[in-house]
Length: 130
Image 1: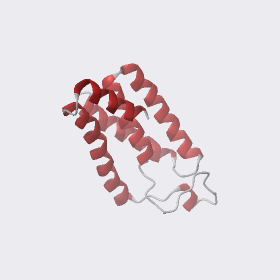
Image 2: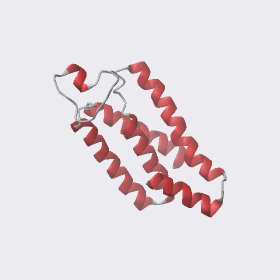
Image 3: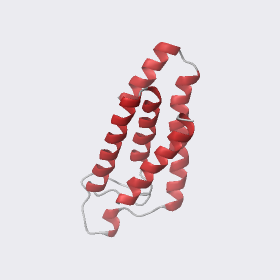
Image 4: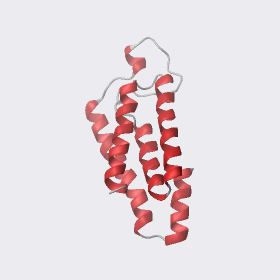
């Protein structure tokens, strides 16, 4: 919802111009690249290796590392930081909590969410803050 608000406000202030396209293209391109990387790594999920039932439903096996949910939340947080430092910091904190939920939910190992978070930060810093 925050991301849609960022896009809407930017559109209303600047029209459908370069900044709106940047806010869409950078996260989307990172998501696609991360998805290819994740498919190549194809790391098993915790519930595949341990005798646990995940709290979050997941139908397909593998592709645990890196976490796309955490990557997406983090890159969107950096986009928000580009517009508002305070909102960006709040969103980055919420992204970290999302990672915790993914681990506690049994669908990711801690390293999966840490790598997703780091990839989101790196991608965002390179393209939004420089």
